[in-house]
Image (tube, rainbow, N blue to C red):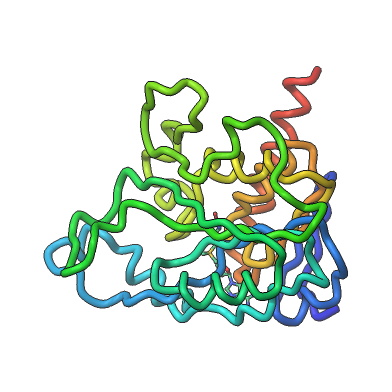
Length: 247
Ligand SMILES: C[S@@+](CC[C@H](N)C(=O)[O-])C[C@H]1O[C@@H](n2cnc3c(N)ncnc32)[C@H](O)[C@@H]1O
């Protein structure tokens, strides 16, 4: 396998290297959850630009050019959940609708979107598309099976909300511009049946933290050594926390 490094931490296996080379060699898994490079225009933002350095960081990391969607293959995963930019929805949803039996669009609300609309609408909702074949449908509590994950306090006690950590820019904590809130990942992971979840664009390991939290085996691939290290630290810390809580 063209892997620069493999690290096993309890039920998690992390692979440092290129997802397009490594993923085909890993075989079938129950679920893939991925937050691949978006297609993003990283220019502009006017007077907000200085306060939003993550746009420069996204461009520097080369995660503004989209991804090769053929990495998603129903022969390799019973279900997939893909985060994407608004403008990727038409192509990505027709692709997923063509290769899987069912699909659904979901959203999570951002509390800190760019406060601009630029002749469009404010980007206060991020989109995920979930698709599955028979036997890999969403499972669990009705309260978790929401298409919209709310950004802030809600008067509906059953509705998943983002915690304090998510509201204070996890990108500032982990140095990665697009860290996904754990409240979002937890909700998605909890509705995955089966045993194993794979994230080919792992970043700082948010999917992995939620996966081990809910007793899943996890495989993560990341090409950037700095984010790979952060993923190791986060997943190790979560497993230690779970162990202490169980003691
Ligand atoms: C949008 S970020 C994922 C962030 C992640 N959800 C988190 O919470 O930290 C996409 C990640 O994919 C990685 N990436 C991009 N292309 C890749 C490739 N071909 N193989 C492996 N990783 C890749 C980038 O380095 C980046 O960390």
